[in-house]
Amino acid sequence: MIRIFIGYDPRESAAYHVFAHSIMARATRPVTIAPLMLTQLSQVYTRPRHALQSTDFSFTRFLVPYLCGYEGWAAFFDCDMLMLDDVSRLWDLRDDASAVQVVKHSHVPAEKVKFLGATQTKYEKKNWSSAILFNNARCRALTPDYVNSATGLELHQFKWLAGDHMIGEIPHRWNHLVDYDPNVPA
Image (cartoon, one colour):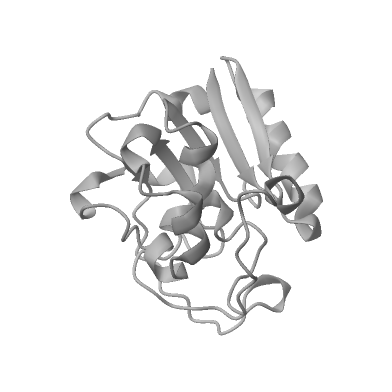
């Protein structure tokens, strides 16, 4: 079973449903898809909203290993994506040597405002956390207490890992940045 978590924000409900459908329509193996909804996480996610937080799931994505009981693998995706291929192909790229696997973008945004009027911030590893394969057993640092108290940069720059050597890479095609990347990768 391929476990998938998708960030959910009520302002992007349609995007969530379109993305979930695009996964199911192309999957050749069974998948489970769970939205990361604040209304369902209130017992474990108690962090107040930060001014730079652009979506409800900015930080809840880091609860995925906890929600899986720190067992097996799981994938997280932002909701504003489309799955253009069979997610099984991504799942087959899991590497037990890594705690997480991501597309290692070199994205430095030029604009100061992003979608829904949120402030655009520039930081190392920008967009790396928008699609993550979690090797849950190797992500035990991501307790609810840590996710509720760590800074946004500590979370999104994977400072909770022992080092960057624990961050594996997946091909760019699995997290293509529309309007930034020149072509849809093959």
